[in-house]
Length: 398
Ligand code: ADP
Image (cartoon, rainbow, N blue to C red; front, side, top):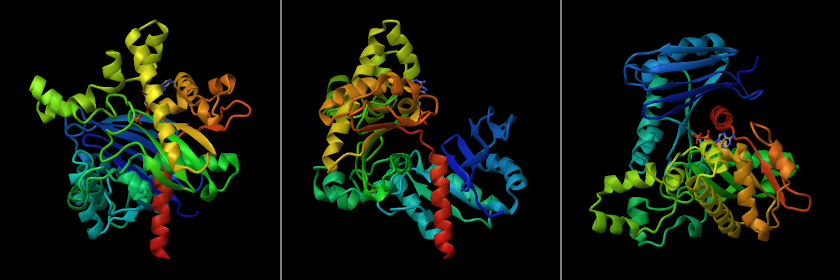
């Protein structure tokens, strides 16, 4: 059997999501998550075939979790494992595509930690632990930012003095690149158009949310910026606010940077607006029960999303379609309906029945007859990471 398996690892500060991905058929023979690492409650949840297991790993760290994973991966994969693919949040300007992690790449990922202090160090923990446990296998880094390195300067530069860009790297980077790349390529395949001659608007709506304009398979603009806080209303993140808000909060309320950071990243968005929850399912239920905060939160979320999509349309010469993905984009009939209602100027209109049908992993077109295409495409970041990892290893061997 051809070697086609890739172990995909997504390390957070206290968690690891993992999946053994068969790039030949897109199946995940083994997947799961380790969470609450470095605490007495550390635990690994597995799914192997149709079996589920939860294994306690008291005080286990990243390496202990990966070590627990190793025998199962080896037992299943034998010599069919070709590489380990790591999701890395920030590649700065150093990485325009996935790369094998050698010493120079390791240094560059470490350097980009200044731009992503919470994420990159955790990603490196995973890379180091996996390299120690699987020394014979290439470790490949796949970056959330790399897909957006094709943005032109007029899309990625802020109107700030040049030195902040050249000396500190202050520019728009964009995130969720793996997902926008995957779903727009799928959308092109679904519509029967070549991806390198296609134009899409894509909305990734999970706990974090972003939009992207993709022209001929390349990202040309996106809503997230220097950090994942810019742009849309998200679960707990505010998205765009007037930058002078910082000064106001400091002067009027005496808030320091940490307090303001927590406000904008953890207490705002759907949670802040509704006063109830960051979870769209809860908000939809509350709206149906007449909750005013939930109703407002959904209206602001959808209007701001539509406004962002309209703005990104400036980056495209034409439109092959609009793609919805992420937990909200794949499941929320209401959010799709409220959002598209603001986009009539772009000849985008939904078919109510098709919209209702595309939930729970069902993909398909949901536009009304005569409208530009609107597609629901479930994202599959693990598969995209696995495919890029495999391609990277093959290119290295060629
Ligand atoms: P993450 O960004 O953490 O990967 P997901 O992509 O899983 O998150 O998206 C989580 C969001 O999707 C939550 O707001 C959740 O309420 C929403 N969601 C999931 N299922 C539904 C549903 N059936 N209807 C509406 N929203 C849903």
